[in-house]
Image (cartoon, rainbow, N blue to C red):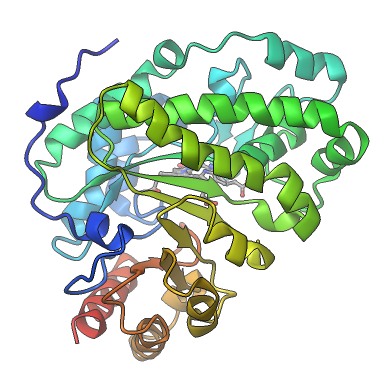
Amino acid sequence: MQNINREQFPRLKNDLILRAARGEIVERPPCWIMRQAGRYLPEYHDAKGGRDFFEVCRDPEVASEITIQPVRRYADLLDAAIIFSDILVIPQAMGMTVEMMEGKGPHFPKPLRTKEDVQKVLDYEVDVLKELDWAFRAITTTRNKLEGQVPLFGFCGGPWTLFVYMTEGGGSKIFRFAKEWINTYPDICHQLLQKTTDVAIEFLSQQVVAGAQILQVFESWGGELSSADFDEFSLPYLKQIASKVPQRLKELGVTEHVPMIVFAKGSWYALNKLCDSGYNAVSLDWLWDPAEACNINQGRVTLQGNLDPGVIYGSDEVITKKVQKMISGFGGGKRHYIVNLGHGTHPYMNPEKIKHFLQECHRFGSQ
Ligand code: 1CP
């Protein structure tokens, strides 16, 4: 395990996203992109060199290089880096095997299908510091290598989203097993969601100790739940994370305020509640009209998003037009706003189009 002195990290030169997340008035909206590192960048494939995804995550030198690649390529256009890792490292730390199938996505050879399967995970004693030591090393290395250019995001998956992967065994279109679980054995589901939440709280807190300066929780499958089921199987756990991470950070001796962002993709019905869920910022998918979201938010939190990632496949002129519309929809972006896409990049995207998107966000956001 590492011995970290947070005072010794390089001084932060660009704290724009931290100020915007805290609700301060800023000179322009900060910009970053979900999945800004990864497969659409040729330099990612060079650095990965055909190795296994999780092997690369566990190598602090390569993981930090991949994390910094977009910051280097889009110099001065990105206001944050996000550590190169995956949401599925929590199920791994809980004793489950997760493989990454090249070009396909995550695969669990033994998903949770019986009560005994779940009990095994509930009984498994998780030592977050030990199991995820490699993740903390990657964060510390990256924080040092970033030399204070931009803040570093730590992240984790939302408990419901992780539950989906643990029960389905991978991505899904119909969510047969996850839905079978919550509609047959809700009590067992709550036990598993609680255990996952406890691990997520410790994992996020230790990422901060290791050097993360801002946190995001990805509840990517939120929108697969009905409004009532979201209130039962997702929201209470997201709220616990927001309230307990700051408590844990205090215990761990972290004195600065670390902003937290929640992204519950597809959970449009929950925006009002998410604005009161304890997060500093709520990330929106592209189904939202920015002005309508602002109207619901009423300045309670910072909103993040929300350009349809598909717009990146369009012409420069159309990207420009849609960026302008987005930023004006968010009231010009000088307060309560962080630029992002409504979801992550795709492997087929042209890095030059992403650059154009970022340049236009700077141009309209500075006006
Ligand atoms: O810059 C970055 O953001 C890179 C770090 C990162 C993050 C934040 C990766 C790298 N994954 C994630 C989060 C993540 N992983 C989410 C939440 C965000 C989202 O909704 O997109 C989810 C749902 C996953 C699960 C996952 N991992 C998928 C999706 C599969 C599905 O069910 O649709 C996939 C394809 C992965 C693999 C993965 N993770 C990251 C990369 C670069 C890759 C591709 C690996 C490869 O083949 O090289």
